[in-house]
Image (cartoon, rainbow, N blue to C red; front, side):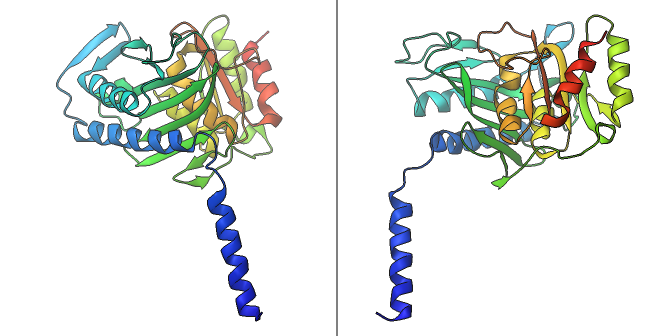
Length: 291
């Protein structure tokens, strides 16, 4: 056999081997979530700065008709593609799947966790910092997540056994050596908040609060934010996708006490999260805890 013939045979064998390998777990769900999130993003941009109705969910929280339209688009797509799966969505709550046999917050089976428009106040005021968040939770833990920013046409994604990506390119969390160089997303509350916030701010370069926790947490995955700190105020749909993406990018993600960061049955607006590079995570947990 000639050298050329041998090379062709080797290439053919490699191609057959590649074709024979099954796709990695949750590949189909990841591709689906990217597509649906982009569709919801296009809907949002079609109506951006032309919102016709704003309702008040509370003194500090609003919802627009675009939130409802985006959620309906996403949930309808999931039901059509994965009818057996349960759903947990910000605006309409829990939905049992056609064959799920469990509730969305039971910690069993497959549950899609959806925030159709995170950063609604930004969106309603024409501030271009909001996103679509879609996650798949199985057995009580996030296994796939997508964050789509329609204003920048950017999509972050990850699965439980794969890398974090941005536009298909593998990304990593910050590798800065010094905490004093950190730019972080931070929102603190509770006991001695001024003292604790001052301690963190003195240790880092600068802190920001952007109005969309999901996209700010996702930014930890590629180092736009070196760390993310929010004490309370978060719900499962804010963190399910972004927390997984940050974690798969190499960040350490925990609750404010350094424990597990995700619980599918957690009460609305009660969750706190710290995400940071492993070398600096414990230091930030200590500073946030305060004296």
